[in-house]
Length: 463
Image 1 (cartoon, rainbow, N blue to C red):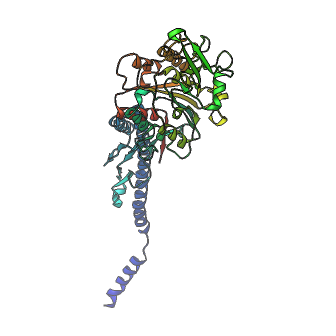
Image 2: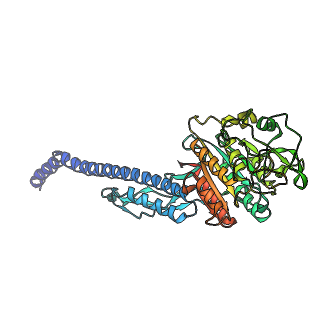
């Protein structure tokens, strides 16, 4: 028995002390770990590349959708389609994914696009560690970009000056004037319920130093701030003028309002007022203007509250001297007229880097009021013929000169019809056909002003 156990004890001891196979075992174990590490690195590299492509595609898509909104804010379906198209085009070279549910929508206020959904990439190696896929983007993460439309160049640094010419003639009285106010400042008249009204959009952020707006109401005359009156029409004017004779004789009185500028040299230019190039004073059958005091012109301002109050208090009266509104919209944007305004209300030189100047001209009918050489309305007792021709011809000439000077002109017709002199004038005045709007009702008027506000805006990407 002892002789048998002796050899066995030696074999067991040698087996116990033999380490010649450890390296192979350790290497085998390390090889598994190394393969998993290498596989994980490959999977993570694939994930990072696909993730970057996905985030970039979403960014491009929401910007494309936002641009479509700026072009036509009425067609939200087209904006969504544009975003979806850009997303799909930008992920064609991406590695295959699973459960890609990324989709796009117009923001509730219409001021940009948002994205939502998720997408995943399969993991050929990490699946051995029970990780079948990795998220490229998901609603619980912060990768989603969104496009935002902001006035005044929050995205591109631009500054804008906007002149709003508003028809407050007698035909606008009542529901039409109410619709105009809705489109500019909302039904509450304070922007609280009107994120899509023009002034509300323009001044939607808390700081708008790079945006200024002038309000130019017009009817048969233009009512200037008293501090600007003498600089515009000169001094030493007669307090009254008696015209005609016999039964056609009448006396007209100096009013605190102005009309057109006579003389072929300066009448259709923005050359500043001075001797022989002042605008004419309005002489009326009383010492009152036709335009109510609520219609006093407001030069460029970034005071949102003051602009809202100006629009809110507008009232309507008188005929349609559209050329006067056109001229004064231009003058509020021209540095040649800076002497009329306080420093804070003076327009900047057109050469200023990043500056864009816009005029938005609105009317509800044909221009039909002109003046003789005395500043008396043509057709009045004793008045002469129109010193500068028809209001329509004057407005068209002023629009042409204003556009040549670099002002971008939008026009809005309110219930003017598809054809006729009024529509033709507005079409000719607009910088191009995309900047002419024909609103048949109050809802279309709101949409027109919203569309213009979006086109005045800058598009930028935010997280």
